[in-house]
Image 1 (cartoon, helix red, strand yellow):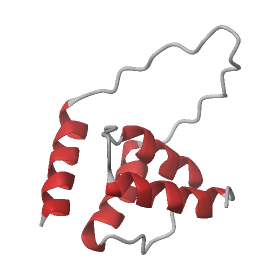
Image 2 (image 1 turned 180 degrees about the vertical axis):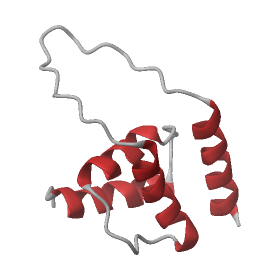
Image 3 (image 1 turned 120 degrees about the vertical axis):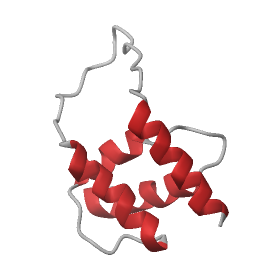
Image 4 (image 1 turned 45 degrees about the vertical axis):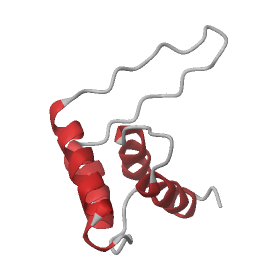
Amino acid sequence: MLRGLALLALLAVLAGCEKESKPLPAAAPTPAPQTVPDPEWRAVIEDWYDNGTFDDAHACAAVRKAIASVPKRDYSPPLEDFETYAALVCGDA
């Protein structure tokens, strides 16, 4: 129940807000931008939402974009699940 409410709040934030990005320090290299269409990264969130697992295959870039789009809190069970899945999909394991 709480996870459902948390995800509804998350989706409301994602639907109505753009995340502000902070500039990188001058010494940090800037990675090449990778465009991920909204439906792809949102599909990652929706896939997890229905039962708390990832049942479909998702591109690494879509998973990373979904993680970047999740509002950061002190504790976020979805974020932990997404990072674990990203490690698997992106070969970081």
